[in-house]
Length: 147
Image (cartoon, rainbow, N blue to C red; front, side, top):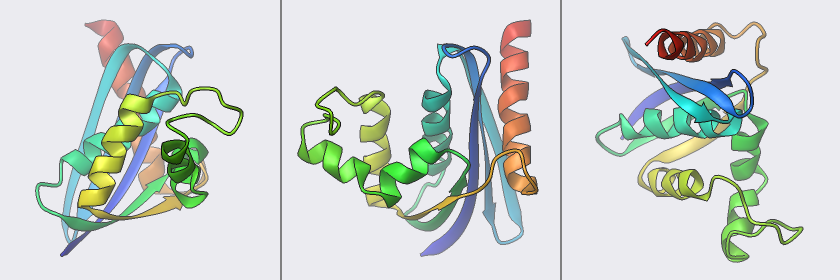
């Protein structure tokens, strides 16, 4: 299997409000930058969308190291939140419904196709790829507002 390194980030101007996502995919010497925006969304939805769009861009099953500054995204996998949500019928421990179920279900599909290792990085720090993803996301919001 090919090994791909992915960095993702989401941004929202207002929460909810206009939001954007950015992703960088790295395979050997090849790099691909991606971004997009939605008019009315939340930061968490954009964080999940960034990961979804990056994984969807991979046309064959890959091993993926995915880096994100989103504790919401990374902890769902590394702390087994997703497993527990599914087991409880998409309810959190407090019996309230899980938000963004549509996106979580898509991420589960994609992460069963690919072999993904989830990594937490510190946001707005010294990681150049994470900083690039943040710029891609915020630039996508700016483009949306200008349209």
